[in-house]
Length: 110
Image 1 (tube, rainbow, N blue to C red):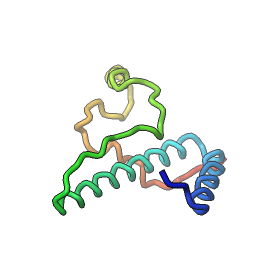
Image 2: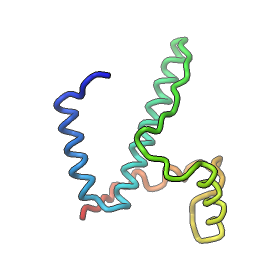
Image 3: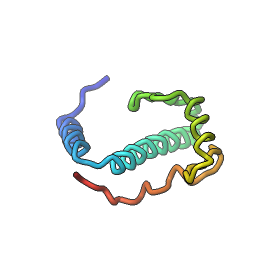
């Protein structure tokens, strides 16, 4: 793996500083935006390659975030919390929720 450039190291240092000043809701939105853009990039690369006759699978690697709970436990929590006034859908096939509030740049710095 190649080394990061000085500009990239600067950006990471700045991001660490700024993240330390952000509120939790702002961090959550930022994290979701980053994951969404990474997923879109993967999809776009695969589509571009497929359009050019190259087909392969890019495995999802979750090195960036620790898995706090298992996928099964998360699904059970969604179902258990569906009785409350939680707006999160319990069906993964319900499109759109994953994009809620991601474009709202109302970042709050503490």
